[in-house]
Image (cartoon, rainbow, N blue to C red):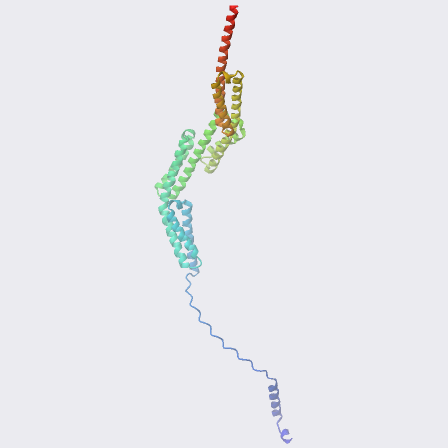
Amino acid sequence: MMAVRSLAPGAILLACALAVSCASAPPKEAPSPEPKPEPAPTAQPAAEEPKADNKELDELRAKAAELRKRAFDLGLKSVLPDDYAAADKSFADGAAAYGKDAAASAAAYKDASARFKELLDRGLPLLAASERRKAESQREAAMGKKAGDRFPSLVADADARFEKPKAAEAAADYESAIGGYRASARDYAVLYKLCEANAVREYIVARDLAKWDSSNWGIAEAKYAAAQAGFAADQKASAAAADEAVLRYGIARDTGLSYYAADRKKASEAERERATGIKSEVAVKEDYAAAAALHEKAESANASKDYEASARLYDQAAGAFGRAYARAKAKMDGAKGEIDSLDAALAEAR
């Protein structure tokens, strides 16, 4: 008891604190595992194209695309097909590598540009010469339809325009020459169509067929005039009007011929009836048979809607029936004269 009492109050407090600490201390946490060292990063290839170079690649692609479009629009694919195919393959290779391998894409686009440029340099003179020949051929076709006689002022205009691409070709301005030659070919094509329209128009007028289809005839006349009026100012509209004129004149001709053939059929049948009225099929059997054969041919052509042929054959049949009638009547009149002479002789004898 004396020993306990002799402990200083501070020692007692320290002992109590130690006892409480031992009773309530939590267990020690397990030590965290050592972090594994991260693998050294794999060395990446140096970026082949920084942003500035991506712009350069896009410029290469745009240049190749522009040359490619020019070659295609001009039609060089048909002039030098193998060269065009090789250039186009390089362009396709550039597109396939784009976004994956910038160096390969750039090399392919450069190659495509070089190939398309060479294609243009070699192909443009060849194409200009080819387009000139086409225009000359179209002019010959129009002149073969007598365009110079039918439309002399329009031919003079077309010929004057044709001289311009010739001058451009001589100056090695091949693209201008190509465009000019193509325009001249279209000029002469319109003249050719106008000649066709004019020929059908003259046919209709000569046979007075317009009255059978006044609607299509009227439209054809308006389009025919419009094609000529717009020849120099609006080539596209002039060509469309010429096409419409050819179409409408054709319809008016066919409609008119169908009615005309029906009219000629009536004439043939009227002559046939007149011939049979005096027994021509008996009196002049061969003549009548020939006329009947022509009428049958006309019927067959009419059934096939070949109205032009049927009208012509009906006219021939009508003429043949008329001749059969005349010969039969001559025979009949001759026989009647003989009978009358005989009757007179008998009367005198009595």
